Image (cartoon, rainbow, N blue to C red):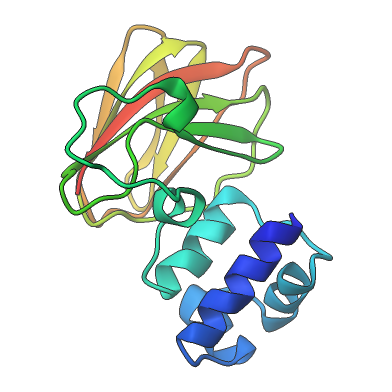
Length: 177
């Protein structure tokens, strides 16, 4: 957690932003951002994505120090892993201008009822390997996606996901960047 705190503060200061300015851009409370930077609070993945989005960064870029080097095969040891108490994401490829897609393996732990809605610039799709995922799209409703089923969400739509059952939901997701 300390590494995240230091890195976030460094990025904020590099951009010349005050705590309040970054908090407003990210849509989070200034006091929460301050606690994160001090290492007194841990952001959820979605909160971290909001902060990084306001800093023009993303999760893969934030956690990865790797470059593409025109590779064809990416070993599991080269992949970025991000997790919190509700979810775990494994990003297959590093952030690179040469890579035009994001591929991730995701796990939503049982009873992750909290949905933080987010948007993506590009379309996102996924295939559920195990369990069941509930996807909420603002102003459209909720959709259950079960093992063996797929979903597709158009870019720009405010959406979120949760797992309401006793089994971990495991899925593969892709997004065109």
